[in-house]
Picture 1 (tube, rainbow, N blue to C red):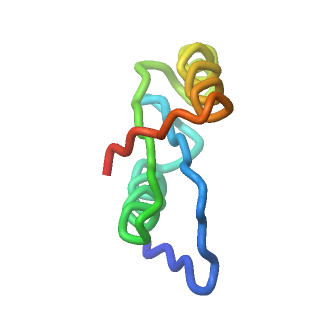
Picture 2 (picture 1 turned 90 degrees about the horizontal axis):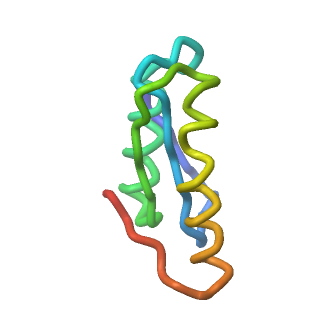
Picture 3 (picture 1 turned 180 degrees about the vertical axis):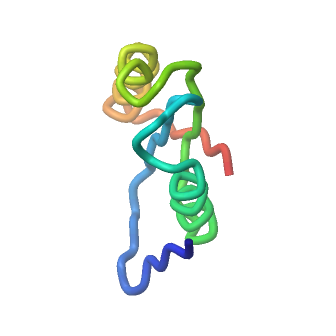
Length: 81
């Protein structure tokens, strides 16, 4: 599962998260996207929550709001690459 960013250049940080029990998006897909972002030098936040595909959103909401607040405040994103 290679992810080729090709001519696309992402110049902003991303926050990627998943549920450990996600039954919708395969782990290999998430890992490949993360690896491609990291290889391209994209600042990539990464966290795994204990829920499934839908529960992870509820579990992540506080971290997502905090992460976005930091971006709007001009604070640099931490990378987990």
